[in-house]
Amino acid sequence: MNKREISKTGIMVSDICLGTMTFGQQNTEEEGHDQLNLAVECGINFIDTAELYSIPPRAETYGSTETIIGNWFKARGKRDDVILASKVVGRSKNPWFRPNGEEARLTSRQIRYALEGSLRRLQTDYIDLYQLHWPDRSIGLFGEGGTTFKGLSEADEVSIEETLSVLGDLVREGKIRHVGLSNETSWGVSKFIEASKTGLPRVVSIQNAYNLLNRTFEIGLAEQSLREHVGLLAYSPLAQGYLTGKYLDGARPKGARTTLFNRGQRYEKPGVDTAIRSYLAVAHKYNVDPVQMAVAFVTSRQFVTSNIIGATSIEQLKVVLGSVDVNITDEMEKDIDAVHQLNANPAP
Image (cartoon, rainbow, N blue to C red):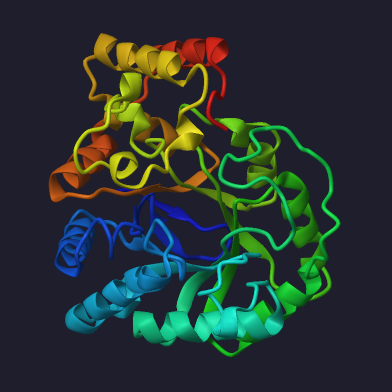
């Protein structure tokens, strides 16, 4: 497992990060601990979670993933061996995130409340990377708006300065080490960097979706990521499992996420099946597991700091971890790019 530095922090993380959002619904606590143990044995030192998890978000399972990880820390010890990332929710009307059903916002008071809850559930005194799960302002999220910007919302926005100010206080208090963004735009990244010039903490990472079906990060954000040292923590390298081909032609395998929760709309748009079949053909041409090819492609990008993988079984996790042995050759990349040219970003 190779290591890469998060921005200029001096923190070295494995180029594969274990995502944990299935812990607490699709995976039991025991299964989650088994995945964590295997990941560490294979050289992963980077774990990503969120107060929101597990997925899909529900009042009954809010914070369950952090609780499972916290119990693992307590049983295993060696907290300092792991780089831990978590997230605070952005603007949301879901009533279970904050006391008395208050709308979730990225205010100073609410961020402190969220962080204290995460620290308690994770059974730790600090979080290495604390990320804003999505912006406070109203934008298209999780593929809802595609690549089309539909205009500004009239809703009020918590200022970036207020959000960064409390995060700076939390850094000084030793409760978090660094600050990251998630599901953010190029404009948002620019504004956060600009605000940091007044003595507020500088964001060091951005966690956005990036996979063969959604390479929109390459348009603007990739160059910004490299030049401004805000590395990508790529999520959904398998496009929620769609790049395996298991959902082709509307198939619904027993126990699969989309079968259980009907949450795959981001990857059920026109042209997606055609693109998936073409990528499967590329993998077949080079005698490579299509799962491993898709994951290895993401890991191989210069602007990616770490590739966040996930699984619902140890067997699946082993296959995904095998991607570290796959080399995206120049010839393979040309074929991948040829598919992308004809089927560019069908699931942004």
